[in-house]
View 1 (cartoon, one colour):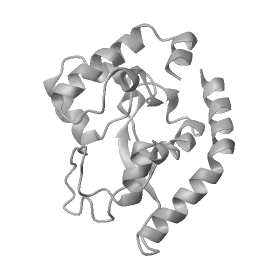
View 2 (cartoon, helix red, strand yellow; view 1 turned 45 degrees about the vertical axis):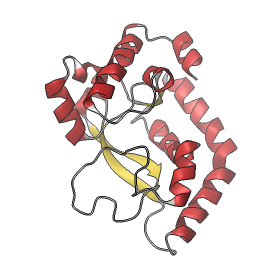
View 3 (spheres, helix red, strand yellow; view 1 turned 135 degrees about the horizontal axis):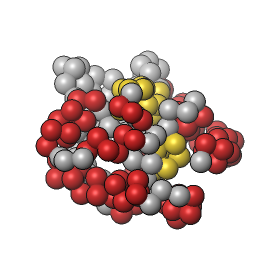
View 4 (tube, one colour; view 1 turned 180 degrees about the vertical axis):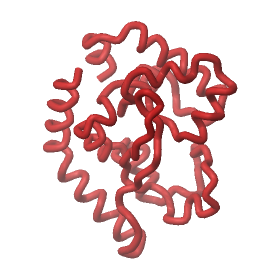
Length: 178
């Protein structure tokens, strides 16, 4: 799995470099040539270890100025114009290829969540922490079988798909997901 993660990530990086460069330029210009282009956000990975997931910044610089973690919503007012486009097309996820290369993530696996949300979800949803037995992924079985979710109920539904993936983990299933 690690070998396929590295090979797929390297191929994807080569193929998407022009898209990433254009995206970086557009984010920089839209924010008045200031602020970060890449957004680093703490997430929970394998064995409950935290790491910084990399994404293109899709929200205003002051999106969480109060320091409180908030679920992103479908029509979130914090999302910029460029941010809306890169979210719809999933371009914002491309920097996670570097997380895969560094070994913090896999190409396929349960999506990593923020520590504040994990702590809350683990108290409300039985077996929630089981999803941390493997590396988180850029995409996963839950992402292709369940729409975007931003609630405890959505997380319960997605966990069922994550647990199915854990139980049936194999290269063939990864290829189906990809």
